[in-house]
Length: 303
Ligand code: ADP
Ligand code: MG
Image (cartoon, rainbow, N blue to C red):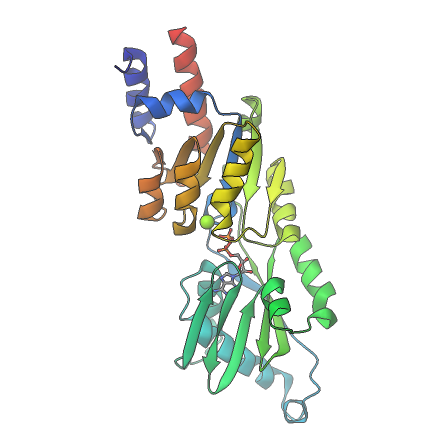
């Protein structure tokens, strides 16, 4: 039987927009010592925007006879055309940027999404690769000439994306997301509760660290492929930690189910909500800190 104090606390949580699936979840929440936060859509707003776009120096004669802005338009056009087929928030940012520039996007002839890496496909007869360094390395695209540009972007907390056309580096662009109001404060409250705060992301190490530092998280697990998120939670549990996971995406669902307590935002994917134990009506992290405080207060009363 669920103790009365737990039922009361569950009701009180609901008043604050914290929906706890049963008293057991509340009891488990009290015992956590580690909180794992997904980056995109959880710590950050998940509505990134393109902030920078740089063409690679070309050794192609045809390209050299064109004006730089015509080349830029072409690269951006094919890039956005391919990204239009992707559902990733990064893709949406690129499409919006191209449309705002007045570009009319053709239909991609081929498209494949490579989770955690990027996209590949054909537009206007040209083969394109768009994504992170791992994707370029796998396909033998040399990014060396623009590595320092990409590193500068990362250090500013932006996510650099490489664009290769016909196996050659064509451009690098940066996409930036904003930290949600409440994230910094919520992490501080988690620290006040004595929790270790871990950020889990598919994004690159440098960008992840730049954002982690601003938000105050203790540990960063970056470059994690979607399937690797659940493994990361298992590894922490194997170290003897009691883990709460906070996520919003379809990719986060297995990790949310694996965690001792899974918390999701009502604004996230339905499958994430189903996998979680706690749903937060507000789409920021303040509810997470509040849920933990609530669980601890309740259990103290009961002892
Ligand atoms: P997260 O949700 O944790 O930020 P993802 O696993 O969704 O991470 O993505 C990881 C990385 O894969 C991105 O940072 C990006 O480099 C690359 N990527 C994923 N989808 C796309 C896409 N549509 N276009 C370009 N790059 C992508
Ligand atoms: Mg996410």
